[in-house]
Image (cartoon, rainbow, N blue to C red):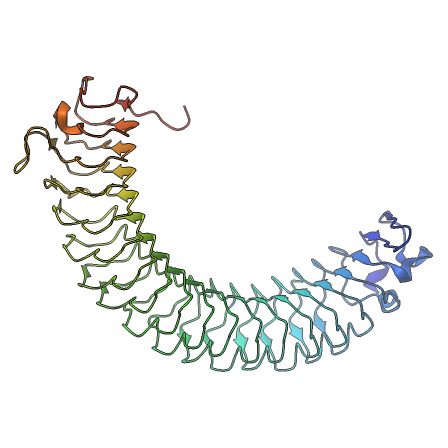
Length: 468
């Protein structure tokens, strides 16, 4: 039998009175140790095991068993029924493990963690995980082509389920029923997953984190996310979704983070997110968005971070960012906007970071473009198409400028504006908190004194690579 081969292992004996431990050399057999039946932790990883050694059946006190990186091919019903104390079982990286029979893990009343990562299990049948009343974590990532309904039925203590990186093609209704304590569900990197059936996640009352990134779905049906009262994080990044309907995210009262980046969305409609009153972070970056309708971001009183970088928008309308009283960080870098109008950022009283970098078509900053951003600390206008910043600006007195009324601004980045040739020294008057002014890699070839700046401002005129 393969278990008679030289086995690499370490054994820790735990005694409530003496609390002593020992390690055995690879050439020492487990059975030779007089206390082996009372061993609490056993590591048999990478030991060429094809089936469980017979001596394991006498090790009733095991709490932790590692059988990873072996050659086990199947787990039959009742295989682990002699381990009433077992809490952690690791069967990952058994590259020949294809089959889990119904009842494979029965008789493990205290099992908390089960790791089946990176095997070649093709399907999970109903009854595979029966009689596991304490199981909290189950890892099935990098397995599977088929997920049967009720595959996880009646796991009353399960809190975390990882089914990422598999070959499954759809999630059917009823797949995750009767999982009252499930908090984290990871379905990311399922490259063949093209369909989420209506109510696929129905009635998961404790779910807080749902990861659906890097899957191939093209749409989200209106009742996909119903009855998820505690959901806080929803990741739908790197999908093929082209449209977000106004009723997609209803009944998600606790949602704080929504990631829709790197999808195929072309338009943000009115009221798309209006039911997400607890939302704090919304990422729409790297989408081919060309139009943001009026009211797209209404009723988001707690939104702090909004990402729209690398989109295809060409303008910022006066009503694009209205009614965002808590917004602190706004990223509109790498778009196709051509100008910043005077009313682009009105009613953003808490904005601290504004990134407008890599807008290569941006040539015009209108007077008062950043007016009344009283808490703004960091403004990035690097790598744009701006050619000049001069005074007097149209509509402003000689004491006013593009960057007026920004009392908290600490860093202003104008670097890598290849066409910026004219920079009036008084353009930076009335910036009492400014610490860094970056004008490196522009066509301003000589240092100037800027009389309106605080004396401690660092003026960066040459690009310094990070490795220096």
